Length: 414
Image (cartoon, rainbow, N blue to C red; front, top):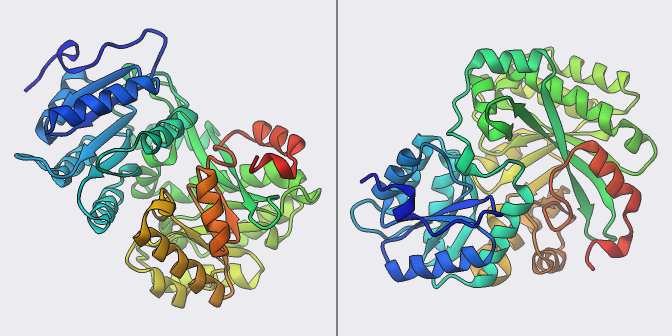
């Protein structure tokens, strides 16, 4: 099936530039969601009755969309098969999984999507609540750094152009603040690499970090981001406006035994101290050379650099990693934060995770905080810090600097 856009999409408004694809076998549900999305300023909404139609629509258009809302229970090609096909297609769309099944089924499907590298925005129960859909669309609008997906193709990047971009310092770094829950004050930022690609526009790390790992470029990429981050944030840290800057550390970079000395040298060159830096390691990273990784991470810890376990709860080796590596911070993945105030299973996981971290003497940072309800729940559970669009979306250092200039305690929670 290869229907033209005119027969598969709601009419697009000329002054709106975001697009979505709703995949559901129930025509009435599609109609309701399309109407809701249009009311939320999504200009073009495509429809498909199952995964096969969804992939056919995307291929016929020859471009990506900004948002895909996918039901799980569909005939012919179900939601799990659809998610797998979307991953194979290389979509960068924000993925939302919806289902009338119990919460555990949605959680399992979300884990499946993440394992396939999809950009998971969240999950929705059925019937879909307008407020829940609105929160997702708000996140899409705030995070949308590109023109309409209607004008951009599926990304295909060659390792040679990535190598050239790293070598020529064509990559940039955005920053997302972390705020302490008790007094609502900024305590740090996470550095997030971006690439202003000449053909595909502004790309997030999901579009090229895996390629960097496969091509043996991750070490150079990590060093580039670290150097830029410490340069950008150095004055803010020295003045006390920020306490730390966090940089992501790939498992592939943990094979270079000279990494520790390089990091320490950059810290000294930028006039900072080891305790000013946090290195974030994902929970489910696969360490090929365990001895080399532990050599590097143990030395970093001994020198005073803080280690953080990122995306906790989304992998399969979290507790094992806590035993192996001296982490000082545990970051709770957005999967367990989004709508946890309405989800008993998520709340239980959040509560247990925060309690575990505190018993181990670790700082807890919750990611993906988007609403006052999220904040209130996390505060009640005793979470140490929060990070998310409720505070600030990732932005260049000049934007973050202006935000720090104007920041008042009462501004954060209204």
